[in-house]
Image 1 (tube, one colour):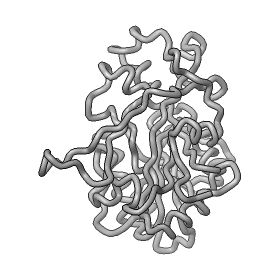
Image 2 (cartoon, rainbow, N blue to C red):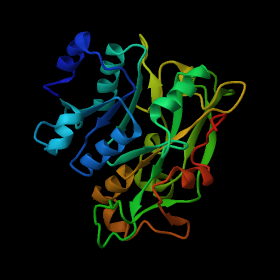
Image 3 (tube, one colour):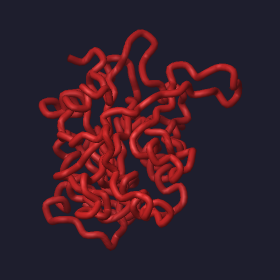
Length: 289
């Protein structure tokens, strides 16, 4: 299906029989759009929404399996506007969002579908799931000047940390069960990244409900959605493995000539498997075994 805009798509939901979870892919450029969409189809999302410019092409097989919605991601507040419109149209449904050249991994994703995972998460009375944005980058920028290579992708195996998230109303008290997480390329090249964009935490999976709003910093208007776990035990967390920061650092005139390689002594080849991310502590299974 192909819709001229989000409004046309949300109007069609009145006659829409497909239930979630829905994957929303926000397409900013033409890099790895097809692999992003195929990866999330394989995860088991029941519907994939590709929000993308009308001039971009999609392979024929994806035209038949993906719901395409014309959308301009270069506009101000494009992410928040799109997600909030879809939240309002899908109360009670599980939604996931990412950008192109980003790939969701969760514990045991090679053998279990995202539907199974969210069913367990729902049983634990959780309506949102914390994910870490794990930066990926090409091993050799000489061969891959845009920093994107699925075959030679690397990630940082250390250098991640968390700080208490302060309450803007009362700066003396940290928010309950909320942390700001840092690491990856945004930490190593922080001089080229605005302070507001250095965090790597993202509530990538969440259940839509009336009046819920996502904010520019990837947090939600309901503070419980922003917590990393429930009060009584740890919950599942996920990882969004992303070339987005590497692409930006190599496209930005202020940083591209200062970066000859992203590799350092803590780089490791990305294995495209949840076990590596679990071993590195970049996600956890909680009580899901």
